[in-house]
Image 1 (tube, rainbow, N blue to C red):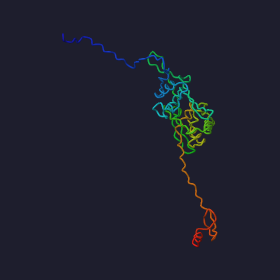
Image 2: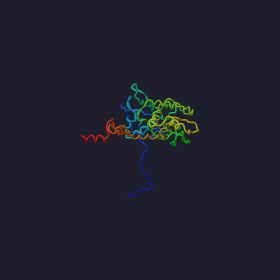
Image 3: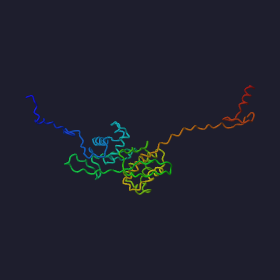
Image 4: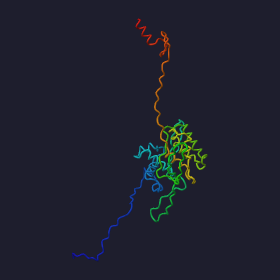
Length: 302
């Protein structure tokens, strides 16, 4: 009775589930509907998806600028700015600069719960029974170009100048908003197609890139120098995204701020020459009179 039967079937092992198990509770208040095209986006970074969800959950009129978001999340302003541009690239966000009647320039942010454009990507299927996965459309952008040296320097072309980087550098912005500099930057960008017809920009791209050009002007760069940097050694292949190429060059080739000029000491002018009333000898004094020797003789005689 104490011997085991070797022919007895083994006990069934418990089945361990694989993958994630969902426990869902239906929300009736304080919830936001998020599409899987965002939650499962094949190209957006995790930070971009999270920030997009946060922005879509905000009420209309809430502030969603870089400083406000940087104060809300542990990421700094530079990382937040890069993520906002990432969301703009994929159609989930649009930002325009508007001038108030008071003259102050503000940024108006529009959030889209579904990306704009007919080529919005759907998430890949998670099971074989799901619909076939669409082929993701990669958005091309420029590769980094070396900084030009001197007024006649050329930016060498790059074969990858038409592909977007995964983490584009933050766009420069001027320290102070100058209406004259804004007009100069806008006119410069709008006229780049005269140098190369492929650089004909949409009005939205001109408004988006104008602050970066104004940052160059704020650092002392001449408008003609900015134009040469943006149009030098463009790739021979068709430019599918000229605005992305210009944005990359404006960020990567930003010149350093001009050094502060040292304060110059005011030149001390010598006193004018006067002729002594006693000995007719020339001496320096603020007004006519006697020289020091003649004044000493008068004091001794007294």
